[in-house]
Length: 447
Image (cartoon, rainbow, N blue to C red; front, side, top):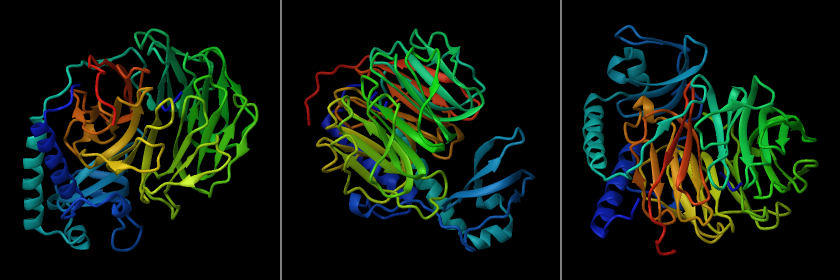
């Protein structure tokens, strides 16, 4: 399926937009908001000036192993590290608690760090006063110790399917009330799952493995004739016949017969990270991104209007594109940038608008069938690297956004029903699956 709150008053919209711009400037270290053609990405090249020791012990005795640098802030470092349990975690290490050698390496300035923290606190205080939709997120009975990577919903929101890295695929036929493990191979590195409109035909991809399909809502699965590859994303037409799949560090493939055969499209090899499809599978979007480092791959956004036969690069900048979604007719598109912003298009990708949202580690987006309602989730919310609400929604085609009273966890994937009112989101790193219902009107003007 297409991958898978009232508007503010003018004064509130202006206030929220101003706050978002301020936050973007603070978190990015820029003096003004860049235009889409000049957006600066957060890519950190691996060189001697920013390399880290594999083990860091802070001044208060905390030790972090297998450390990898994610981002440099004025007051500290965001790093990925290995947990004692064997998984990976994220931490924000303040310069004041790091060894003097690291302080010097990254040019720590105590006065600049304090000024940054003061400005950030002021902006976040303003954001916290923004009214939020009146919805309640419920932790479902799905296993809470899985590394969930992808989730998809049928059009009515009753059938849900969720996949886990290093685990299995689970399904629910009652909007998430109960879950059962499917017949898909367990202990596989599932990266993405997509569904037909009725939830019967499914396609799922394994990173470093094969592509599987199901024709009975996930009860049984069949491996398809696709190459073994680092599959990163899949999308489906509403009838489950036309499919598109992306390979990280490879190409983009399409199928016109429910995955029986696959064709490698005429696209350059890059770090393809997300794909989206219109209802009939004719209009496609493919975008490149990366996990932490981009390995010197290009990271562009391409669109196709003929089921992948030919592709055209959009005017969007090189960025760490993380997730994409499409309306049923393929005219409304939304993409998000990991450690960046959200961009929307209302003309099939011909032009794009940079949305007034905080600069955060956006990890997943979804859209209603008509494109009027959108939902976006943040990856780092629960670790207070960006201590703000971690799920946002829009009910006017992405023009304005509202934050949610959602749990502060590391969201990994999100999906919605065709009307955009039923939401489902998954948590990364041993977390669970949550659902929510939005009671918001749809009588909003089209852009």
